[in-house]
Length: 108
Image (spheres, rainbow, N blue to C red):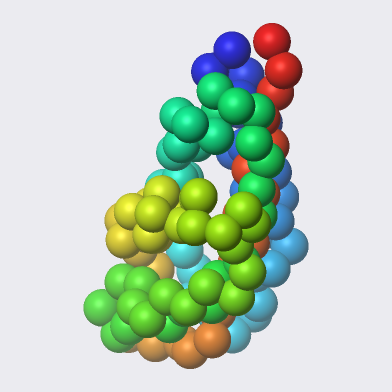
């Protein structure tokens, strides 16, 4: 079940991430997907997190701003942990990049 849940989540994030890539944004080199919180998975809670962030000249994510988080705060920590590991092309700082994460549990 966990594998199927993870696969559904990864596919939804990948589809959203690809559709939001703009030509002027640096290319994303490392992508780490957020873990589905155990409480949310055990209780079949779906969620949505929208963020805006900056990319530093060193290729790291900085200044994450949450635009939307439903249910409030349930998925935020996992999104921050994952985004801290993201890497983009160096020497191409960018501000106001947006991404959306959709968390969808699967029933057994």
